[in-house]
Length: 342
Image (cartoon, rainbow, N blue to C red; front, side, top):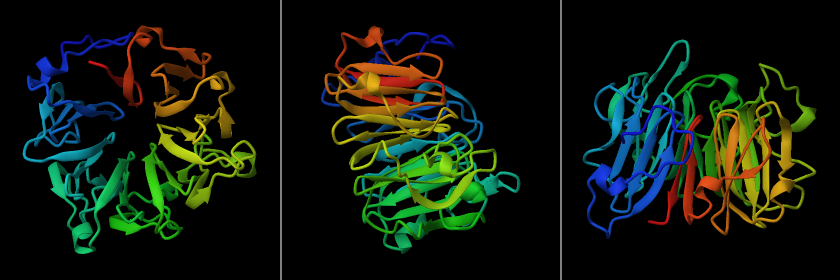
């Protein structure tokens, strides 16, 4: 995109020119930031990807880094999740595709869910879900595991089992997408962090996997050290969230957040808060969207104003976008993107 290696202020990208999309009836559906890379999904189902690609996680058939957004050929994309080593997408028919690193003895295997540890440099259909009659509503990728949400509200996980990130009592790797037994229906959203997962069901947040930085929000009742984890989904119970109904969840590297139906923002993790902490500095705003990075978050209110936070600074308005109407935000571990009014 002809941007410098480091961009310290929001920079406008002339996406129609970069992607060669002159048709004004086509718009951006969403921009998705992976930990280190980015995808742009258009309203007509085309998807363009860019960034590091050392494991084939961009699905382009090779392992070369891509600096200019490049089209994923031959597939209509409804949504996509980019992980640090592998990625996954849901097409317009609700079928799930995965690609990238298949795993190793050291990291764990099966994160692509194809029954083996083989890598795939291009999007590969997950046949086991078709055989089981499952259609995907959402998919989210962690470092070495993948979580899918079906249209029936069931959660399926595959990949490395260490730190309990598959949510099924054990720490064995799984080669196929298997149901999370305690959450087999009624789930509305999922979000994977580096080695943990959040799920939202009936306004309640559940978490499982690694918890060494308090990213599961379980508070001081559970020891938080380098081995801390939960092998099964645990409801995030907090005095701060009592009687609150959550409508959106988000997970980053080792940080997590949620938004209530009243527009209140809570966050936890990164060894700063071990249970949900209310962001009182945003009490004046109704928050509608949240994006999580490595050790920072961005929050969007219903007036289209964007706020930022990291543990070394206070909550502040992002002045560089103050006069822009923002429609969507996404964050990687070290970068973020926003869709603004054209």
